[in-house]
Length: 345
Image (cartoon, rainbow, N blue to C red; front, side, top):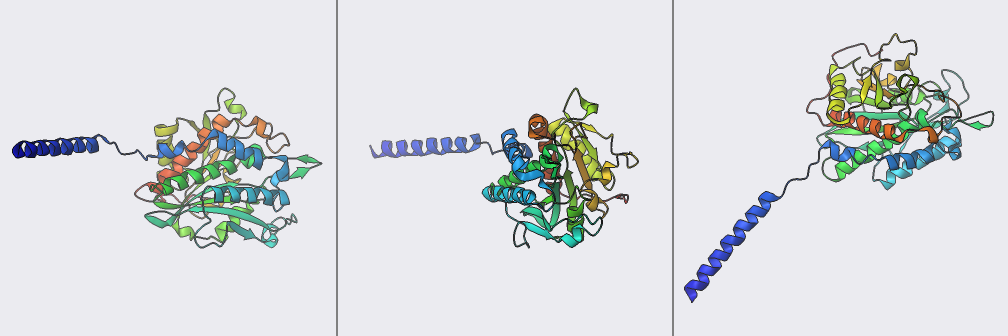
């Protein structure tokens, strides 16, 4: 009886041990690739935020206006609700810019204003900074009409909010970026790139440690050159300073998003001079590899008719996901982008 009991116990132990081993082998690790976090960027959230950012209540978000400040408070409250902090070394979400700086070039009688920043600290190389930027100002009210700027640049504003949330979720789950990500909502872009110029002259983190700028300005519509499809994006400046940056933009698109990359406006001699007309330029001219994502202009550009009802949210979502994929790759690649060219101006 004792021998039978011992034998039965040994058999049971062996069976349980074998079953346990099989169970462990059968469990597959969770895939925490960039595709998991790309999926966090949702059409619904982009739409919900844009309907507020580009609403009449924001009064066209003119630089330094109460409407712009109200939009800024909404952005900050949204970051707080998603656990995205202000940057290390700052005291809050604002980089204050005095009126004297904003009016030094063109004397437009602008009041004090603010850049808004948020931050996801890197896990391995926290001192190396990847900037993701968009301007949140627009042109205000003209002759009683509110210029809501849903595409320009409400689309970029909500895009970088979503990108920040995706990076933060990755970090919360133990898969945050190796390099730090600085989200910059610029003021004064419409008046002469003032907010990005101020940051470049008063950086929170040394420009020498800034790896790249991914700048988003108008990604919610299509232009007359793409009437048949919105499955495209213009890339401007990606190859001006860094072959690595150009390759990253090309490779992540082929691997994940399959947009048509259009380089129509990438020539510095293009008469539109778009390369010089958005916030990335103040980083590029300081030798920082920069890429500008853009859908081109349309009939509602800088008109009161640039409304949320005309935004193509499928395009906005896909382009936001593409921008995230670029930033994710830059933030997580083994080596920082190499600057192998000197023609940032």
